[in-house]
Length: 402
Image 1 (cartoon, rainbow, N blue to C red):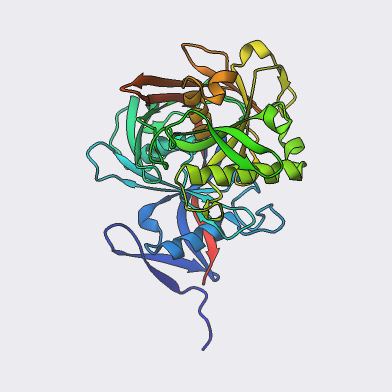
Image 2: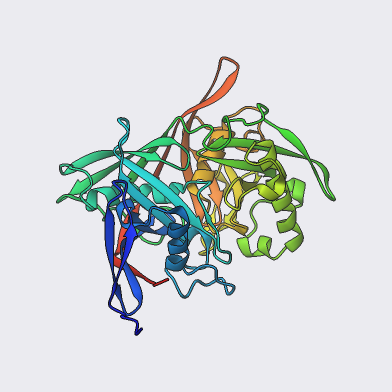
Protein backbone atom coordinates (compact mmCIF):
# COMPACT_ATOMS: atom_id res chain seq x y z
CA UNK A 1 0.00 0.00 0.00
CA UNK A 2 1.31 3.42 -0.93
CA UNK A 3 2.18 5.62 2.07
CA UNK A 4 0.19 8.81 2.44
CA UNK A 5 2.65 11.49 3.65
CA UNK A 6 -0.17 13.82 4.67
CA UNK A 7 -1.92 11.42 7.01
CA UNK A 8 -2.47 12.32 10.68
CA UNK A 9 -0.85 10.62 13.66
CA UNK A 10 -3.02 10.11 16.74
CA UNK A 11 -1.28 10.28 20.11
CA UNK A 12 -2.78 10.06 23.55
CA UNK A 13 -1.86 13.33 25.21
CA UNK A 14 -2.77 15.66 28.04
CA UNK A 15 -3.65 15.14 31.67
CA UNK A 16 -7.32 14.83 30.76
CA UNK A 17 -6.48 11.70 28.69
CA UNK A 18 -8.06 13.22 25.59
CA UNK A 19 -6.63 12.49 22.17
CA UNK A 20 -4.56 15.06 20.34
CA UNK A 21 -4.34 14.98 16.55
CA UNK A 22 -0.86 16.04 15.43
CA UNK A 23 -0.76 16.88 11.73
CA UNK A 24 1.93 15.16 9.73
CA UNK A 25 3.57 16.94 6.83
CA UNK A 26 5.86 15.12 4.41
CA UNK A 27 6.40 12.26 6.90
CA UNK A 28 7.20 14.68 9.75
CA UNK A 29 5.01 15.42 12.74
CA UNK A 30 4.39 19.01 13.84
CA UNK A 31 4.28 19.63 17.58
CA UNK A 32 3.54 23.09 19.06
CA UNK A 33 6.60 24.42 20.88
CA UNK A 34 8.39 27.58 21.98
CA UNK A 35 12.17 28.01 21.99
CA UNK A 36 13.25 30.14 24.95
CA UNK A 37 16.36 31.42 26.65
CA UNK A 38 16.22 31.39 30.40
CA UNK A 39 19.27 32.81 32.17
CA UNK A 40 22.34 31.28 30.53
CA UNK A 41 20.48 28.26 29.15
CA UNK A 42 18.14 27.59 26.25
CA UNK A 43 15.44 24.97 25.87
CA UNK A 44 12.37 23.86 23.95
CA UNK A 45 9.14 24.47 25.90
CA UNK A 46 6.04 22.31 25.46
CA UNK A 47 2.53 22.24 26.87
CA UNK A 48 1.97 18.90 28.58
CA UNK A 49 -1.25 18.47 26.60
CA UNK A 50 0.73 18.44 23.33
CA UNK A 51 3.02 15.56 24.34
CA UNK A 52 2.57 11.78 24.43
CA UNK A 53 1.42 10.48 27.79
CA UNK A 54 3.69 7.45 27.63
CA UNK A 55 7.10 8.34 29.08
CA UNK A 56 9.16 6.35 26.57
CA UNK A 57 7.39 7.94 23.59
CA UNK A 58 7.90 11.39 25.09
CA UNK A 59 11.60 10.75 25.65
CA UNK A 60 12.05 9.55 22.07
CA UNK A 61 10.39 12.76 20.97
CA UNK A 62 12.75 14.91 23.05
CA UNK A 63 15.79 13.11 21.63
CA UNK A 64 14.55 13.78 18.10
CA UNK A 65 13.75 17.42 18.82
CA UNK A 66 17.16 18.18 20.33
CA UNK A 67 19.12 16.05 17.84
CA UNK A 68 20.49 13.38 20.18
CA UNK A 69 22.40 11.17 20.32
CA UNK A 70 25.03 12.84 18.16
CA UNK A 71 28.50 11.29 18.06
CA UNK A 72 29.79 14.55 16.56
CA UNK A 73 28.41 16.39 19.65
CA UNK A 74 26.94 19.22 17.56
CA UNK A 75 23.24 18.25 17.43
CA UNK A 76 23.01 19.61 13.90
CA UNK A 77 19.90 17.53 13.23
CA UNK A 78 17.96 19.12 16.08
CA UNK A 79 17.43 22.18 18.23
CA UNK A 80 20.31 21.49 20.61
CA UNK A 81 23.67 23.22 20.47
CA UNK A 82 26.16 20.55 21.46
CA UNK A 83 26.37 21.56 25.14
CA UNK A 84 24.32 20.49 28.16
CA UNK A 85 23.23 24.10 28.76
CA UNK A 86 21.42 24.20 25.39
CA UNK A 87 20.18 20.59 25.20
CA UNK A 88 17.08 20.86 27.33
CA UNK A 89 13.32 20.40 27.20
CA UNK A 90 10.60 21.77 29.47
CA UNK A 91 7.04 20.60 30.09
CA UNK A 92 4.50 23.13 31.42
CA UNK A 93 0.90 22.66 32.59
CA UNK A 94 -1.52 24.36 34.98
CA UNK A 95 -1.13 23.08 38.53
CA UNK A 96 -3.83 21.46 40.63
CA UNK A 97 -1.89 22.26 43.80
CA UNK A 98 -3.29 25.09 45.95
CA UNK A 99 0.20 26.50 46.57
CA UNK A 100 1.16 26.65 42.87
CA UNK A 101 -0.09 28.11 39.61
CA UNK A 102 2.07 26.09 37.23
CA UNK A 103 3.74 22.67 37.19
CA UNK A 104 7.21 22.62 35.60
CA UNK A 105 9.07 19.47 34.56
CA UNK A 106 12.64 19.72 33.31
CA UNK A 107 14.30 17.20 30.99
CA UNK A 108 18.07 17.19 30.46
CA UNK A 109 18.88 15.60 27.11
CA UNK A 110 22.35 14.10 26.76
CA UNK A 111 24.22 15.26 23.67
CA UNK A 112 25.98 12.07 22.61
CA UNK A 113 23.85 9.43 24.32
CA UNK A 114 20.18 8.41 24.04
CA UNK A 115 19.45 9.63 27.57
CA UNK A 116 16.73 11.95 28.87
CA UNK A 117 17.37 12.67 32.55
CA UNK A 118 14.76 13.98 35.01
CA UNK A 119 16.83 13.65 38.18
CA UNK A 120 17.74 17.34 38.30
CA UNK A 121 16.06 20.66 37.68
CA UNK A 122 17.34 23.67 35.74
CA UNK A 123 17.54 26.92 37.66
CA UNK A 124 18.27 29.01 34.57
CA UNK A 125 15.25 27.78 32.63
CA UNK A 126 13.19 28.29 35.78
CA UNK A 127 13.36 31.99 34.94
CA UNK A 128 11.49 31.38 31.66
CA UNK A 129 8.66 29.32 33.16
CA UNK A 130 6.62 32.26 34.49
CA UNK A 131 6.98 34.35 31.31
CA UNK A 132 6.04 31.32 29.19
CA UNK A 133 2.91 30.70 31.27
CA UNK A 134 1.83 34.35 30.99
CA UNK A 135 2.57 34.65 27.27
CA UNK A 136 0.70 31.41 26.56
CA UNK A 137 -2.39 32.65 28.40
CA UNK A 138 -2.25 30.00 31.12
CA UNK A 139 -2.67 32.67 33.80
CA UNK A 140 -5.01 35.59 33.98
CA UNK A 141 -2.78 38.49 35.04
CA UNK A 142 -2.96 42.27 34.84
CA UNK A 143 -0.16 44.55 33.70
CA UNK A 144 2.42 45.41 36.34
CA UNK A 145 4.57 43.30 38.63
CA UNK A 146 3.27 39.75 38.94
CA UNK A 147 4.21 36.65 40.91
CA UNK A 148 3.91 33.18 39.40
CA UNK A 149 4.05 30.28 41.84
CA UNK A 150 5.76 27.27 40.28
CA UNK A 151 5.89 23.65 41.43
CA UNK A 152 8.92 21.79 40.08
CA UNK A 153 8.06 18.12 39.62
CA UNK A 154 11.74 17.08 39.50
CA UNK A 155 12.43 18.23 43.06
CA UNK A 156 8.89 18.54 44.51
CA UNK A 157 9.81 22.10 45.50
CA UNK A 158 8.16 25.50 45.01
CA UNK A 159 9.69 28.68 43.64
CA UNK A 160 8.17 32.10 42.98
CA UNK A 161 8.96 34.09 39.85
CA UNK A 162 8.52 37.88 40.08
CA UNK A 163 8.56 39.94 36.87
CA UNK A 164 6.78 42.73 35.03
CA UNK A 165 3.94 42.25 32.55
CA UNK A 166 3.24 44.80 29.81
CA UNK A 167 0.28 44.52 27.42
CA UNK A 168 -0.50 41.06 28.85
CA UNK A 169 2.98 39.77 27.97
CA UNK A 170 6.12 39.30 30.07
CA UNK A 171 8.39 42.32 29.72
CA UNK A 172 11.55 41.54 27.77
CA UNK A 173 13.47 44.80 27.42
CA UNK A 174 15.45 46.07 30.38
CA UNK A 175 18.91 47.09 31.55
CA UNK A 176 19.78 44.04 33.67
CA UNK A 177 22.75 41.94 32.55
CA UNK A 178 23.81 38.47 33.68
CA UNK A 179 27.12 36.63 33.20
CA UNK A 180 27.30 34.49 30.09
CA UNK A 181 24.59 36.36 28.16
CA UNK A 182 25.33 39.25 25.82
CA UNK A 183 23.13 42.31 26.11
CA UNK A 184 20.55 43.17 28.74
CA UNK A 185 16.95 42.30 29.56
CA UNK A 186 14.12 42.75 32.03
CA UNK A 187 15.01 41.53 35.53
CA UNK A 188 13.30 38.39 36.81
CA UNK A 189 13.54 37.59 40.52
CA UNK A 190 13.38 33.95 41.57
CA UNK A 191 12.72 32.95 45.17
CA UNK A 192 13.31 29.26 45.88
CA UNK A 193 11.40 28.27 49.01
CA UNK A 194 12.74 25.66 51.44
CA UNK A 195 15.11 24.28 48.76
CA UNK A 196 17.03 21.85 50.97
CA UNK A 197 16.81 18.15 50.15
CA UNK A 198 15.70 18.45 46.54
CA UNK A 199 16.90 14.95 45.60
CA UNK A 200 18.83 13.74 48.64
CA UNK A 201 16.99 13.22 51.94
CA UNK A 202 18.16 16.48 53.57
CA UNK A 203 20.24 19.62 53.07
CA UNK A 204 23.28 17.75 54.44
CA UNK A 205 22.66 14.18 53.22
CA UNK A 206 25.28 12.63 55.54
CA UNK A 207 24.55 15.06 58.40
CA UNK A 208 28.20 16.15 58.18
CA UNK A 209 29.69 19.35 56.80
CA UNK A 210 32.65 17.36 55.47
CA UNK A 211 33.13 13.72 54.48
CA UNK A 212 36.09 11.60 53.41
CA UNK A 213 35.97 9.32 50.40
CA UNK A 214 38.65 6.96 49.10
CA UNK A 215 39.77 7.91 45.59
CA UNK A 216 42.18 5.85 43.49
CA UNK A 217 45.62 7.49 43.42
CA UNK A 218 44.64 10.14 45.99
CA UNK A 219 43.64 8.18 49.06
CA UNK A 220 41.26 9.92 51.44
CA UNK A 221 39.78 13.07 49.89
CA UNK A 222 37.69 15.64 51.74
CA UNK A 223 34.36 16.68 50.20
CA UNK A 224 31.32 18.63 51.29
CA UNK A 225 27.99 17.17 50.20
CA UNK A 226 25.13 19.65 50.07
CA UNK A 227 21.68 19.54 48.48
CA UNK A 228 19.99 22.91 48.00
CA UNK A 229 17.92 23.08 44.77
CA UNK A 230 20.23 20.32 43.44
CA UNK A 231 22.74 18.00 45.13
CA UNK A 232 26.36 19.08 44.64
CA UNK A 233 29.73 17.64 45.64
CA UNK A 234 32.22 20.37 46.57
CA UNK A 235 35.95 19.61 46.51
CA UNK A 236 38.94 21.90 47.02
CA UNK A 237 40.51 22.66 43.66
CA UNK A 238 43.92 22.65 45.37
CA UNK A 239 43.41 19.03 46.49
CA UNK A 240 43.32 18.09 42.80
CA UNK A 241 46.30 20.29 41.85
CA UNK A 242 44.02 22.97 40.37
CA UNK A 243 43.36 26.63 41.17
CA UNK A 244 39.64 26.69 40.43
CA UNK A 245 40.26 29.49 37.93
CA UNK A 246 41.19 27.38 34.89
CA UNK A 247 39.32 27.66 31.60
CA UNK A 248 36.79 24.92 30.81
CA UNK A 249 38.92 23.81 27.85
CA UNK A 250 42.02 23.41 30.04
CA UNK A 251 40.18 21.24 32.53
CA UNK A 252 38.46 19.12 29.87
CA UNK A 253 41.81 18.47 28.17
CA UNK A 254 43.04 16.81 31.37
CA UNK A 255 41.48 13.37 30.90
CA UNK A 256 42.95 12.06 34.15
CA UNK A 257 41.36 14.91 36.11
CA UNK A 258 38.00 14.43 34.37
CA UNK A 259 38.06 10.74 35.23
CA UNK A 260 38.89 11.50 38.85
CA UNK A 261 36.09 14.05 39.09
CA UNK A 262 33.61 11.49 37.78
CA UNK A 263 34.82 8.93 40.32
CA UNK A 264 34.44 11.48 43.14
CA UNK A 265 31.01 12.45 41.88
CA UNK A 266 29.70 8.91 41.65
CA UNK A 267 31.06 7.74 45.01
CA UNK A 268 29.74 10.88 46.66
CA UNK A 269 26.35 10.31 45.04
CA UNK A 270 26.10 6.98 46.83
CA UNK A 271 26.87 8.71 50.15
CA UNK A 272 24.12 11.19 49.31
CA UNK A 273 21.73 8.23 48.89
CA UNK A 274 21.05 9.06 45.24
CA UNK A 275 21.75 5.45 44.17
CA UNK A 276 22.95 2.19 45.67
CA UNK A 277 26.19 1.98 43.68
CA UNK A 278 28.44 4.35 41.71
CA UNK A 279 27.44 2.86 38.35
CA UNK A 280 23.78 3.67 39.09
CA UNK A 281 24.44 7.40 39.60
CA UNK A 282 22.83 9.45 36.83
CA UNK A 283 24.68 11.81 34.50
CA UNK A 284 22.80 14.82 35.85
CA UNK A 285 23.02 14.36 39.61
CA UNK A 286 24.96 15.05 41.66
CA UNK A 287 26.92 17.88 40.12
CA UNK A 288 30.52 18.37 41.24
CA UNK A 289 32.36 21.64 41.71
CA UNK A 290 36.02 22.59 42.10
CA UNK A 291 36.07 25.50 44.55
CA UNK A 292 38.88 27.88 45.36
CA UNK A 293 39.77 31.17 47.01
CA UNK A 294 38.83 34.30 45.10
CA UNK A 295 41.50 35.70 42.79
CA UNK A 296 41.84 37.74 39.62
CA UNK A 297 40.72 35.90 36.49
CA UNK A 298 39.79 36.40 32.85
CA UNK A 299 36.32 35.41 31.64
CA UNK A 300 35.79 33.37 28.48
CA UNK A 301 34.92 36.61 26.63
CA UNK A 302 38.24 38.19 27.68
CA UNK A 303 37.09 40.48 30.50
CA UNK A 304 39.37 40.77 33.54
CA UNK A 305 37.66 40.29 36.91
CA UNK A 306 39.27 41.60 40.08
CA UNK A 307 39.70 39.47 43.18
CA UNK A 308 37.90 42.13 45.23
CA UNK A 309 34.69 41.48 43.26
CA UNK A 310 34.60 37.74 44.04
CA UNK A 311 33.85 35.82 47.24
CA UNK A 312 34.57 32.31 45.94
CA UNK A 313 35.51 30.70 42.63
CA UNK A 314 34.06 27.54 41.09
CA UNK A 315 34.38 25.33 38.04
CA UNK A 316 31.41 22.98 37.67
CA UNK A 317 31.21 19.59 35.99
CA UNK A 318 27.78 19.06 34.42
CA UNK A 319 26.82 16.14 32.15
CA UNK A 320 30.52 15.15 31.90
CA UNK A 321 31.58 18.61 30.68
CA UNK A 322 32.93 21.71 32.42
CA UNK A 323 30.14 24.28 32.39
CA UNK A 324 30.91 27.50 30.52
CA UNK A 325 29.29 29.52 33.31
CA UNK A 326 27.81 27.76 36.34
CA UNK A 327 24.45 25.95 36.50
CA UNK A 328 22.16 28.22 38.48
CA UNK A 329 21.06 25.44 40.82
CA UNK A 330 24.72 24.65 41.51
CA UNK A 331 25.41 28.33 42.20
CA UNK A 332 22.49 28.40 44.64
CA UNK A 333 23.80 25.28 46.36
CA UNK A 334 27.26 26.85 46.57
CA UNK A 335 25.89 30.05 48.12
CA UNK A 336 24.12 27.91 50.71
CA UNK A 337 27.27 25.89 51.43
CA UNK A 338 29.23 29.12 51.92
CA UNK A 339 26.93 29.89 54.87
CA UNK A 340 27.33 26.46 56.51
CA UNK A 341 30.14 26.73 59.04
CA UNK A 342 32.88 24.16 58.54
CA UNK A 343 32.01 23.20 54.97
CA UNK A 344 34.75 23.41 52.33
CA UNK A 345 33.09 26.38 50.55
CA UNK A 346 32.68 28.17 53.91
CA UNK A 347 36.39 27.72 54.63
CA UNK A 348 37.39 29.17 51.25
CA UNK A 349 34.89 31.98 50.78
CA UNK A 350 35.01 35.58 51.89
CA UNK A 351 32.07 35.92 54.23
CA UNK A 352 29.34 38.47 53.56
CA UNK A 353 25.97 39.19 55.10
CA UNK A 354 24.50 39.87 51.65
CA UNK A 355 24.83 38.03 48.35
CA UNK A 356 27.64 35.53 47.74
CA UNK A 357 29.57 36.63 44.63
CA UNK A 358 30.51 33.51 42.71
CA UNK A 359 33.38 33.69 40.22
CA UNK A 360 32.82 31.40 37.23
CA UNK A 361 34.13 31.17 33.63
CA UNK A 362 31.59 33.72 32.39
CA UNK A 363 31.91 36.29 35.16
CA UNK A 364 30.50 36.89 38.63
CA UNK A 365 27.08 35.64 39.75
CA UNK A 366 25.58 37.01 42.99
CA UNK A 367 23.30 34.63 44.92
CA UNK A 368 21.48 35.28 48.19
CA UNK A 369 20.86 32.44 50.64
CA UNK A 370 19.01 32.58 53.98
CA UNK A 371 20.73 29.84 55.99
CA UNK A 372 20.29 29.25 59.72
CA UNK A 373 21.47 26.75 62.34
CA UNK A 374 18.45 25.78 64.41
CA UNK A 375 17.67 22.84 66.68
CA UNK A 376 21.10 21.36 65.95
CA UNK A 377 20.45 21.34 62.18
CA UNK A 378 21.39 23.53 59.24
CA UNK A 379 18.41 24.82 57.27
CA UNK A 380 18.06 26.98 54.18
CA UNK A 381 14.80 28.91 54.15
CA UNK A 382 15.14 30.85 50.92
CA UNK A 383 17.50 31.34 47.99
CA UNK A 384 17.19 34.47 45.86
CA UNK A 385 18.62 35.03 42.37
CA UNK A 386 18.04 37.37 39.43
CA UNK A 387 17.87 36.33 35.79
CA UNK A 388 16.58 37.46 32.41
CA UNK A 389 14.64 35.44 29.84
CA UNK A 390 13.41 35.84 26.30
CA UNK A 391 11.10 34.03 23.91
CA UNK A 392 13.22 33.29 20.84
CA UNK A 393 10.93 31.37 18.50
CA UNK A 394 7.41 30.00 18.50
CA UNK A 395 5.48 27.66 16.26
CA UNK A 396 6.14 23.93 15.83
CA UNK A 397 9.03 21.53 15.97
CA UNK A 398 9.18 18.77 13.36
CA UNK A 399 10.17 15.19 14.05
CA UNK A 400 10.20 12.25 11.65
CA UNK A 401 7.24 9.92 11.92
CA UNK A 402 7.95 6.61 13.58
